[in-house]
Length: 265
Image (cartoon, rainbow, N blue to C red; front, side, top):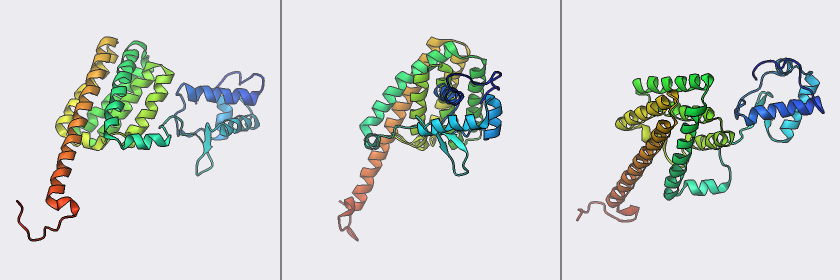
């Protein structure tokens, strides 16, 4: 929740001002989707408001769907912008052709995010980026594909945050939520290939180093090259899977032929 608000929250209504302050924290990304809030007593002290005022403010946010209660009754930030929930997304995710469109969009947005991050990242952002890159290196060294894949997403999220473009941040958080769930393509298959993991690690480091060097042109180029490579490998994996399925159907006669004891040919 950040530092204590020295003079308290004032305005037309203390409860409305409290709600508005928390809304601003959600919009700027300081409060993340699914993140639990402090206990009521401690949060009231941090915000320098009374507990009844805080309850009224949080009730306003609950009515808006911005806060929800978890299984323990504590308040958490609603899962906002973590995915696109329209049923159309399920239809799109089942179409192979859409994967290319998704990655094409990601390429454009990743380049934009990296370029902005190289220009706008502050010391706090750079520390978060450094931690994410260290996690990738550690997981890569231990050949832990699962952890490396998760650290991959976290590095990209750190880049979006460092871009300091709020619309871009929330769009990319939603896309990252879909990526973690395996919508549009299977990350596990991507990271199952050691040679691919080596390239991805090197590409992530190139993006990271360009941002840390405050070189927006290099950061943008590295991000675009990374997404182009990812798109190519995913297409190769999909093609190999399709060939395997055809081979299996040939062996099994498509599941409807009676071939027991009969020679092939």
